[in-house]
Length: 309
Length: 297
Image (cartoon, rainbow over all chains, first blue to last red; front, side, top):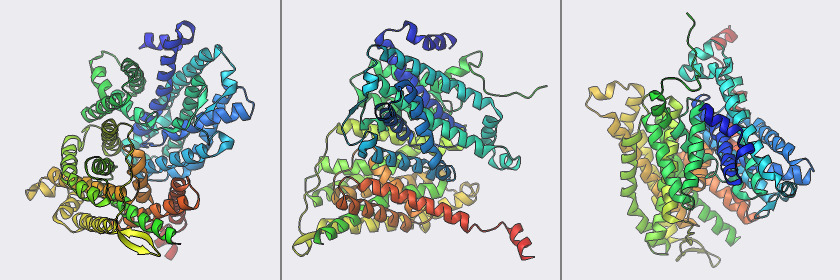
């Protein structure tokens, strides 16, 4: 795992253009899937609207760099802020609902974002596709920059989730998932922890959408496609499970590698991965990775705390 | 004016279809707090299957699609048998939401694979009720509307008063009771899952008859049914029906007023209703018994 991590972090230095493209795809999916799994597995919030925030991020990149004249690299971070702001506005609604209505509400929020953005020409909508000229003007350095942005995003999200999971906020969420009554009785900071996870997940999805379109140099309404963002996150949850940090990371990498291996058969690939996801989730909460993990003599990224003697 | 009437009448048929799918979602939620999106998949499958296998007229599609209902029941029961309550060691969210969601994504992917990128033409409208020389509602649409209402009534009866519904209620209240009287809870739940899948298929047929054939992705029927569920509330099947009609009417009338903005109007209506519900529940929150006692002295 350490070798894989090192290889990923140094990708922009050694990788060819095709490998670099794969790594960008993988790390972008890592960012979305990691936080999707964390929200679902620990915060008890299943979001069906990850694609909404990713799309908002993609179009925010166009708006900020093309219209606002902001440096495209800075605009990627700005896209995360825009997605975070959207999440902050709808957060009080979503976080107060029970799990099932909340999941459906996130779906509706994503649909509203899709409709509003793709129909408003001021933010890039109204056209089948928009070229992000400041990004295209970067020329040959664009691929390298996209790789670095993906590395910062993907690795940053893994580190952030690991840190949050081990912090008292993460522990509060775990306690709440185990026994809500006891967690409430102990006055654990569950609401704050859920809110933080929700906002960070939205910002990360927004930046993921921005990075993915930074690489291609254009935005299109397909930026809001759930088959690109939300459904792969569900499949990755089946492969990597919901309760570990390294599981979604490995699941996302495997997902992108398999996609590359059988490219050109997207619909069959979607069926295979969805089936793998279902089987992985049905056999255990840790998915396919849970099986492999049990055979290991150590925990790759331990998140459990053992009481001191 | 005639055209507005026609749009509203078709939206009513679509609304009953959407409401039926929403009632199926609601039944799963009411019983076990589950997000069962399989009725959404069977709705899309019913609509697409009827368009692909039956003729082009509304009646052909309606009759041809009804043949698919037993298949939907079989799928619902089988899927429930395979994945219900799994993973056994998983958390509540995983079992009740993530696994059913993954199953629905698989169903939707299979449907997309089957249909490819093909778009099916809307069913050809026949004769029916006319208003100022405009066909407002065809006989096939009327039959579809009646079938939808009957199906919803049967689902409501099954959930609330039927033997299956009473057993489900007993299981919810005292899970240890059913095995003692020789009832297998898994079988009861599987039967309910089959009924939900069937309701989804009939709902999909209504959508298919009343307008364009829904796409295979979850984000078409699923989103509409989810909105109807949120608008109509979680407690009564009639609420789901009202939610479905409200969402479809809003979409259709907004689309008629300004082309392309129909779906957005449905989404906004949903968010407004959910927000209003939350605000209302905060404003008129009933005090805890201890607080009430203290206030009353």
